[in-house]
Image 1 (cartoon, helix red, strand yellow):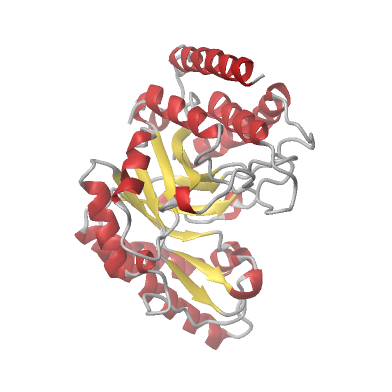
Image 2: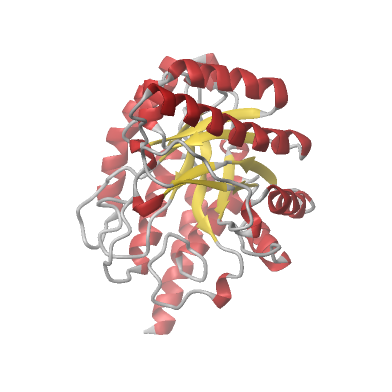
Length: 351
């Protein structure tokens, strides 16, 4: 049975790679959305910060995946969704989240000619969702804005000094974004005086249309955890049919903003029902095939589209071989069959 499985897997990968090389050419349309071939789109991986100086083998593992980009995420913390105090770059954080650690990590990837998107983002205590951050008084809003601006501008300076190719100004902060548009417009202007690379913002899949400042940025960033199927064991046909519905909306929105869409996060857990609510970290049993099929469906449904700029796989870990067991259901494809799917796709799409 093992031989039959490996033979079937090999046949699938050959067929999949051939499919990648025969995608149809983009149709004529909005000139802003033309001129980027499938090979020029962003083949990215999101790297979880390390508690230590990053291991050279981890950098090599990203390069071995034929990823042209890596996303680095120096987290900051707030206690609750109503707390305006932002904590970052302190001794309680992992080394890879500090300014010193981020600079070292950027340098490690720069030596391997891998481009960098720096994506500082908030984490809220007690498992609360960042999209619900909302202050209860005007004073607290002002305090949050001051703290958040310090945090983002400090890392914008890092992005500038380290020549990062892209900078993400925030992640899944919808209530904050909608309630305080003047602050965000001013913040973007302030970042532009420091950092001259490409800018994006990462909004949740169900709220991107409410963001008021897309035209001030270079890409529309979406964390692409779209619900696609209630199947326990997903089928490629069902997932592709679901993507067709979303693709029409994404294409129309991209055209309306004159911006390409970047999947600032995309990924699926290796478990049953992986496409039902991809943002949930439930306790479903391990299912490696689901992760493979869901990633294949995303690639085949989105990559050749004119509105699509590429994406960052969620996610990758430093020292993975020492961390996870074979029954792990995390989003990472490391040491799982899905790793071959991503690697084959990224290799054939180019950097």
